[in-house]
Amino acid sequence: MLRKRTAAVDENEGNLKIDKKKAPRATGVSDNETRKGVWSAVISFGQVLLLIIFVPPFLNYASLQREGQMLQPEGGLSVDIGLGQKIHLMCKGHGQPVVMLDAPTGMSSDVWFHIQEEVSRLTRVCTYDRVGLGFSKQAIQNETTGMEKVWRLSTTGRMVDDLHRLIKSAEIATPLILVGSELGSLNGRFYSHIHDSEVSDLVLIDPIPDDLFEEDQWRQYWYMNLVPSLQVMQFSAATGLNRMFIILGLMQPALRGEGVSQVLEQRQKYYLSNPAHQSSAVDEHFFLNESVSQVKEISKYKPLSSRTSVSVITGESFDEQLPSHLNQLVAKLQKKCLEQLYPTAQHIRVYGADRRMIYKNPSAISEHLTKMIAQRQSKQQSQ
Ligand SMILES: *[C@@H]1O[C@H](CO)[C@@H](O)[C@H](O)[C@H]1NC(C)=O
Ligand SMILES: *[C@@H]1O[C@H](CO)[C@@H](O)[C@H](O)[C@H]1NC(C)=O
Image (cartoon, rainbow, N blue to C red; front, side, top):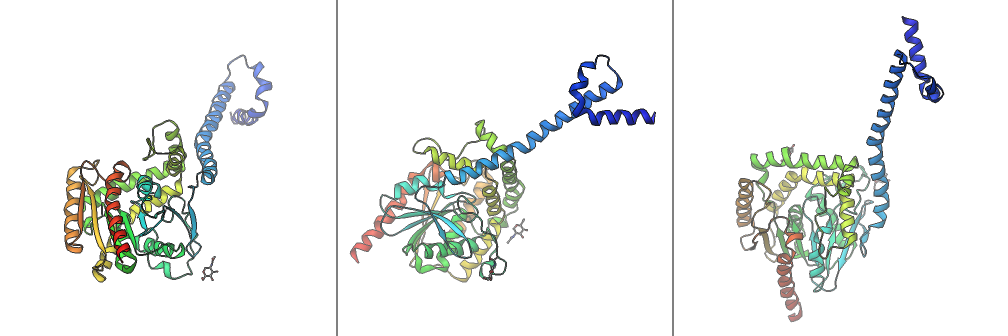
């Protein structure tokens, strides 16, 4: 019995090599032959499995390497802001005041495309990718340098430090009109409170209110629902699944259609398939509560200068895909926060819009910016 088994195993081990030679002889169905069949089925199944597991991530990785060079935004700059970190900056148009746009949580600067095009007819308008997103690759951390350790990576304090060094390094003229959406609005507030002489106007689009993360229902939604779904996105980007979904048309970029170039669409697909970009998007969401509490502290400690004008743009709801009680919660807390901190702020409501208005209703935002720029420019001329 024991001998027989050993023999069978031996034959099976030789299976791969001698299979072809032996095949023509295999007329009768013996015990050994059945086992051989099972084994080769197992082996080919294993090979297919390996193919499924390793090939998509490998192809995805190879494509990302190629696309990372091909899809560099035209006219963009890679600005060295020190500490080995480079930031992707893209400015269009000429004149002053300069408008600086800071993207919503987890998004690249491409989200501003329509607004930047429109506003660049009047003045210089810049967008940038926060560290880790888009074309601002995460620098290798040097733990021995001190300053940047004050704020955790992917939180507002750190981003504002980067933005300040970017504005200095790229010699962007100040005071500027600083526009931020969601996390970008936290950055805008933090920046304006600290570097008050550099900001003439602060524009907050869908601001994240200070007390939002004190609310159980919001924390529940954010950490049990939204963040895990973004982690799944990151995982499926890493495994090459997102690229497959895009090819199959199951996943689409946010900006598409009229006025959106082929390259811009390609670039968004590149971000969707890029696990490094997706991972930074997860981090920005994960640490949003910390960003909020940093801004809250700064606002208490250093109120905004009365010379800085504030305006707020919100849609009819924060996010139309959210249940209404969460939208009402955001609206209530936004109102409270603005009344306390910026009582003179102008508030513009865009009907039928939500947080996607930057690319779905861009004209509502560019119209407001146009008015603001015209006012500042006529003041400049009269001086
Ligand atoms: C890290 O920073 C320190 C201090 O600036 C410098 O001496 C050191 O060479 C840096 N290390 C790396 C790996 O860049
Ligand atoms: C933010 O949320 C995380 C996860 O729920 C928690 O561990 C952390 O203490 C929170 N931070 C702040 C500043 O509230």
